[in-house]
Picture 1 (cartoon, one colour):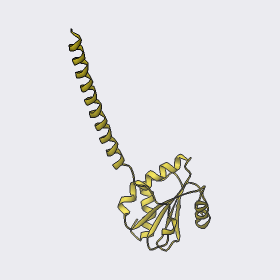
Picture 2: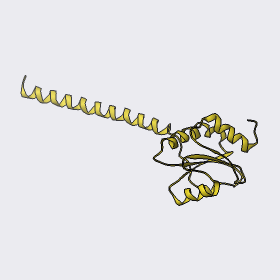
Picture 3: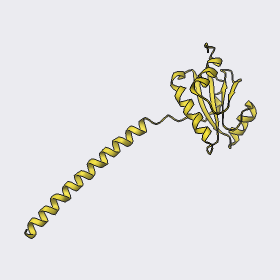
Picture 4: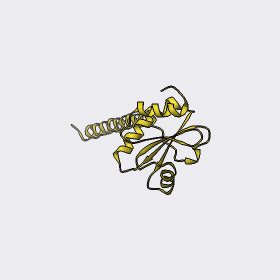
Length: 146
């Protein structure tokens, strides 16, 4: 094989390698975009929404407690069916806002507090919980049959 043939072969391999890298990068980018679109929407921490005419479900969380993540999954599983009727909120027990919420509502670290449209605490749910138990608590404040 001549030196020119070797250079041509290296150039061809290099072009194929670059093309393969771009294809792989494109596929990875598509997977990342699809995964991002399927991530759950975030929860607001704006506790001023409580008592403004909609029921509210507030997770008091501890970022270091597994139970917090389980309760967030439960909240995510029912959130869409109550869209527009219930505010889904979160507060951290280790912040001034979280401590004030806990004191005002007799909640605790890692609880879900269900609040009626007027801002009155209706129910405090302790872990573990299921989607069904949260739905029952929400139905209680919405006046729907349980």
